[in-house]
Length: 297
Image (cartoon, rainbow, N blue to C red):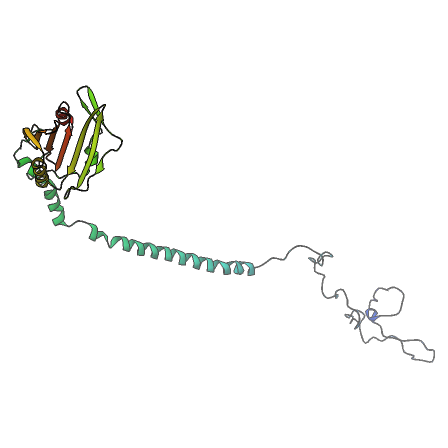
């Protein structure tokens, strides 16, 4: 006895009923069933229909209605690990190159510092001779001042006869000379050059005045003392009068002076210095001697 499959909903027969359409078999026109296929056989779905699942296969218990819309990310698997290792190798290579370059730089710089060291280090001979040179006693050499014999020079106010003329006669001439109670001042004309004196470096004439008294002066400067003595001899030989006195100009016995009483009753003094000067003053016999003695040149 065969079982019948459960009755489905009313409607036209489909592939799941296991039946074939009835065909007229008799005159009565009643259909007959075909038992070529078992109603329990697996139905064949139609070309335009898809069965959710077949009888011979159980549904997947892990599949839910939310499988299609689930937000759970899939397991990355082994591929991300391989991708992570891909960028690690270049980094390791760069680090190795940097370390190798640093080591090579240190070795290179270290080698340069070590090469000049032997050149700067003193040799054994220098080390032994240096102390001897520094510790050797040094004897001072005698200087000329230590061996020279002391010389004594006369201390005088006047310079030595070998001193050259200053060639600045005007700076040595005085503008005011005191003689006793009188003071003789150079008049407003001052000193005027005398062009008639040949060979002199400088030659001037001037007049000193004190009240009614007058003293006239001739001052000359020569290249040397010999030239000065020659001019002084000319003045002495050309003076009209009587020579009353002569002697040394300075206390150190340098220079020479001559005193005259002129025919007109005035007095005159001529003197030389040890610096090429020849001077002559003419005035009253009461004051000309004191003027010569007070004049600093």
